Image (cartoon, rainbow, N blue to C red; front, side, top):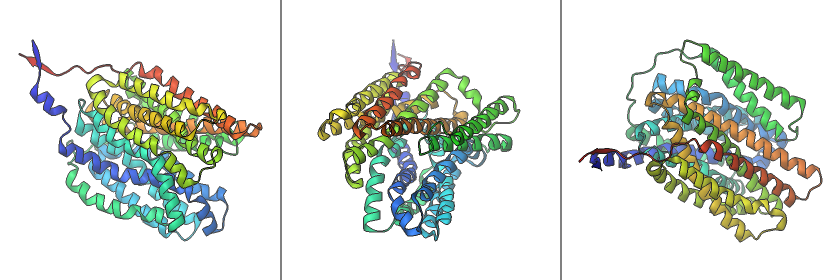
Length: 473
């Protein structure tokens, strides 16, 4: 006869210190994610202020995304070399300084340059924060711990348009950046007290300079090419094909280098030889493609097809955020108890049910029905993100967590860029063919639904139920 070990049960609880750690770690990333969303709302105001075109102003957002792609692969080495706690606080400090400089920008080139500074901090906060929380939580609590860090992803599409709309209407676009300062400055001293010191000795291995020279520009080229593919250039434009092709060639060169080098590579690609980690990475790639593209598609649908204002669009998306909060909270606990496979599968089914109504856009479904479906969609996406990350971190050893965090965030970001390019290309193609907006958006949502559906394939390889800790009676 066996009984659950009391010490194991105690270790399974989310103690107050772990909760405080999670709360601290999400504060600054929430601002970074809202900031990235709100900047798009302020594009017109920036163009008017600097007396330039919207095409030029788009580099304020595009440059930020490219810089994030460049710095994300560095997160693992920086965490091992200087300590995850120290580097997370440094990332928040850099993001804070970049925000202040963006608010003070005197020209568009200056604003773009300062956004790059801001992106260095913004691109490091999430992967390093995940490293800290995953190592603090351990395998038995990682699902619930990761659910804390999914909050920025869930709420940014709602809060970003609302914050951006209110700031532009009532204040000035510069306040989108100034609003970050008091919260970030308050987070830093709290983090110094709450976040524990790094347990392991610093890794003195040298930075993989060749890997950095191959991977970071390669990722930036792929992200930029996919962004162009979803814009006016189109997926078949020579510039798009050349940029994506060059980026893929650099990434392929990095893969060869990482497998052959005797030094610690920037991202250890041998982690992908672990079946459960590889399955989680594929799922995160597809989730990024479905989730990020839907985040772009849903606001555009309400604005273009339903003629909603920016502020009203944010309010219409509120049911999705509320559903995501509930789904994320419940999914972490359920995944720790029953394993990620069943929880993620249920979340994907809910997401599919929520998206189905939007595929029927030509039938003009009532707004209340779409709002109800957004609750389902929110419950679904809230129920898949945290358990999928937990499945990935649970498949690697503790000392491999920093490298895994960099790999997971890179894969997720690439999936988001690819999904956004696919859906915007489909939407633009249908509109160019003369389809009315409702039919065009209906087709794009069918593609989003398809991306969500095929995510079920790698999820089938996730771990099922976690065996309880037992001890002899």
